[in-house]
Length: 333
Image 1 (tube, one colour):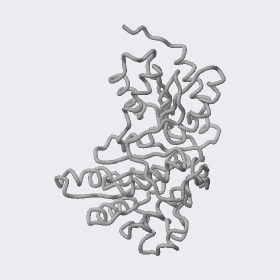
Image 2 (cartoon, rainbow, N blue to C red; image 1 turned 180 degrees about the vertical axis):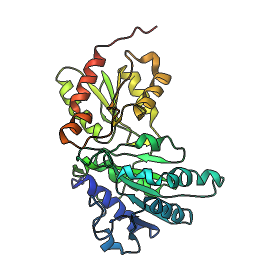
Image 3 (tube, one colour; image 1 turned 135 degrees about the vertical axis):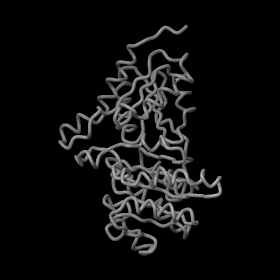
Image 4 (cartoon, rainbow, N blue to C red; image 1 turned 45 degrees about the horizontal axis):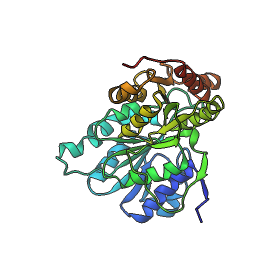
């Protein structure tokens, strides 16, 4: 009988961490308020009571020190999970992330190993304003040496988090704040989803939608509505943003001949540009229309709920983008 137990996105993260801490005594957690409080979003709840204060460590408010702790601990043989409360706060720790964690293995000729996982909460939708709502994944994906993961559902969250913890390179697990309460079937046993392998959330023939994290779920809503119009969307969830499963995306583009790339991050300089470039380099002759990009306006995230709702792309935005691309055609030679 299949395991039909359901967990929330946040609970799936918690279970992944707990199971890896049970399996490996070198795994420990450190971050602001992750101990008795369980983290600002409760994703570490109960872990300190279970594993003790030496393995679930409350830290001072210093993101640079938190990541520095992780770098030092990992390079000396431990397997730390270090938490930065909000994704916006990675900016405080960029020297440790970019110039230390991402480069040490290279600078030591492959002799150094950094099995460190940085966890953080990204995305908007909670009226947390401009300094607590950003999607900065493109910044991290630009750094050689980092692996960047952004799950769209509880099942992927658990499997990808376990893979992050087991990986011998620095990984960044980005939890989307608006997905923390999302519920789905999650197996009890520990399982891995390979980093760098995307997923076809919905097969289709008319247009490919590439979307991740919260936008993958918005794309599913849009696809259900478009199916009523006779437009069958294939939805690709990259799951891991770095390394990116370009083969899966390009193969889908060759099949459907039209592609819409969606992300919550600011459209300018976002991952949509990179994905569009790879498609035109590897599948240009298959395209019946230019790749369409959907992202947020070039502005800080508004605090006002009404403005924020307008700012962040959603199913309606995706519907409009797909309808537009279906009306466009290019002549292929």
